[in-house]
Amino acid sequence: MNHSSNDRKTRQIILASSSPRRRELLASLGADFTVEPSGASEEVPGDWTPERIVEDLALRKAEWVMERRARSEGVIVGSDTIVVLDGAVLGKPKDAADAVRMLSLLSGREHRVYTGAACIDAASGRAEVSHRFTNVRMKELSERRIEDYVKSGEPMDKAGAYAIQGLGALLVESIEGDYFTVVGLPLALLGEMLEGFGVNLLPSNP
Image 1 (cartoon, rainbow, N blue to C red):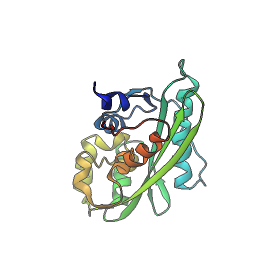
Image 2 (cartoon, helix red, strand yellow; image 1 turned 90 degrees about the vertical axis):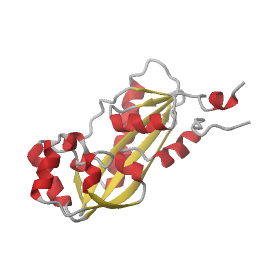
Image 3 (tube, rainbow, N blue to C red; image 1 turned 60 degrees about the vertical axis):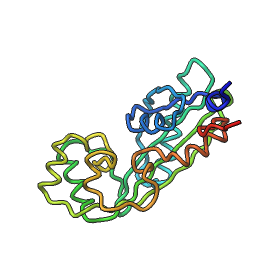
Image 4 (cartoon, rainbow, N blue to C red; image 1 turned 180 degrees about the vertical axis):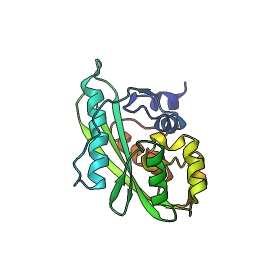
């Protein structure tokens, strides 16, 4: 009997996100999970700190799914990512011109990516929330390079108008911190949090 496969599938994870990037990251760990996208509002007061924004929105997304679930089992995971440059939050671009504006601001400079993670026990309602941040330095980007990247379509649903795990990797000079935080789900942090909810993604061998 293979204990390891049983040990790691004690509780199901419910990912409260429609992000294909977050789905891919969870799947890369062999996690047993389902996806239930959250419809929670992402509006926040303008004076909130980046830490508060990502933690509140991650928790809000998980709570939204929990309130609408028929079954009270498993662990619901919410996550939110923002890009911050000189204290200003760069969300997802409204259109191509907005994406060009954001990338022009980021060009040749360092910014910080914050990602919040929240876990809720669907049975008890117990919740935990935390965050990580990573510093990212962009290359000097010519207008042509920015326009070519925006025309690829990749920036349009990404915070800060780039995807480090896609073509956006060609724009990044260096990162200091956790790569997965930039993609949108800090896996080491999430793994620690899930262990506290009885989900061990690293199988224990007999």
